[in-house]
Amino acid sequence: MREKEGENMKIDIKDVEHVALLSRLNLTEDEKQEQSEQLNKILDAMEVLNKVDTSGVEPLAHVLPIKNVLRADKVGETLPKEKALQNAPEEEDGMFRVPKIV
Amino acid sequence: MDFYNLTIHEVKDLLDKKEISAVDLTNKQLDRIERVEDNVKAFVTITKEEALKRAKEIDAKLAKDEKIGALAGIPMALKDNMCTDGIKTTCSSKILHNFVPPYNATVTEKLIKEDTILLGKLNMDEFAMGSSTENSGFFPTKNPWDLNCVPGGSSGGSAAAVAAGEAFFTLGSDTGGSIRQPAAFCGVVGLKPTYGAVSRFGLIAFASSLDQIGPFTKDVTDCALVMNAISGYDRKDSTSANVEYPDYTKYLENDVKGMKIGIPKEYFGEGIDKDVEAKIKEAISKLEELGAVVEECSLPHTEYALSTYYIIAPAECSSNLSRYDGVRYGLRHDANNLVEMFSETRKEGFGDEVKRRIMLGTYALSSGYYDAYYLKALKVRSLIKSDFDKAFEKYDCLLTPTTPSVSFEFGAKKDPLSMYKQDICTIPVNLAGVPALSMPFGLADNKPVGLQLIGKAFGEGTLLKVAYTLEQNTDQTLIRPNVQEVK
Image (cartoon, rainbow over all chains, first blue to last red; front, side):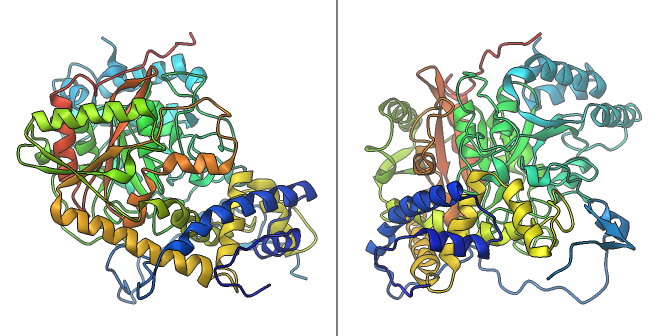
């Protein structure tokens, strides 16, 4: 993909296909067209952020001043295996069965 | 007596005096649901048997004068993105159409401990993405005030159920306004607590740095009662705030003398419906009459909030929704290989708006675009938060309209951007993580107008006090719709 910084960006069908692949979403040809149009409109609307001077501003990913919430490495309550498997679309020998990877 | 129009505190009184039993009350609520639900369509799942079973247990406790919870016997319902052990939880999405959680959300556990009665799970915009509940993967919920109009979203079912008297209170979740906006549209009280005040453990995540659970109630007193039940530090939620939580009912005082209320000018004027603004100005006059000091102020980065949100929220959602892959739960579309299975499952299981936001988020986070979009948005978020921090140095709370207009007809906002703009008054609050409450204040075009009060972090008490005072001194806040009965 192109390297860009704050310029007027346009998403074409190729970009849509790439993003769909990254998100593991199969789209129909119509959906690709529609997504391309709508994403462009939305991204155009987001361009307004380029007007804001953010030099020297720290990014705020999280509003509370909490960091590194840890606990003692002690075994506590755990979800029983049968419960964890209860929604499995396909189960075998206590494992989630899926199609082959390749 | 129309039991369904009573508040929690009124009905609690009857239960305490043994003038009604929990079973009777539950039956009356289930009857009410039966009479109006085909018109309102607030519920995805109604748990009739479980509710009556629970009610019997609570009556037994009451008979033995056993220690009971503060909300004992009160029938309520939960938005369908809160896990309920053994009860289907769908997020109103096809991809979770058959998901039965193996555990309870913390809020569910807390409400069980308080001996409340779960009536069922409520409809929503799919994965909490939307402002009208039209994006539900199953069916739309209707506004009890006008069945041709939307209840708002994404907690449309939660708001409509309280407005229509189908539950004494409900819980919803708010990421960009999803409690406050439907509360405004349906004429009920809705509170988005401070980020971290209510545990997100068991809340199916949309945007982890923005989501918060909160109550829908008929009045402010009820709101305080429910907040007492659901707030608090939770070890299971690593974003839970480990602070002291008050008894929120102690803030229910009829007194705003000397309180300083800021009116951010960016929330008025262009983009806000004239009739909505007029009602809000009426409320402002009332507060001044009651002794509050009201002053115009500014939150200068407000105009950037929508864009900031629509980069951050989709970015976080694209990560949170990657777990829906057909492997461990939910819908699975069979395929020859794993990647095909993921892609076909998600194609089939997600609705258009969800796909749109996943795509937007993935794009904003992808290599080459991360700095320009996501990082930039996080920096603007900092500025938006400091606008609020500065304002709260001077003001006890801020007052704005909750929404730019009253409820609109189904299909009126087909363009995604026009739907996103429904949240211009609510979104900045989530970005800053501060609490905000919406309360009804009269009608415009025969539909409820919502008034929003915004407080500083952990300042819910101030919001309750101002809201309670307004409620006690005007007849504009206890409005109820006339819902057409089906039977």
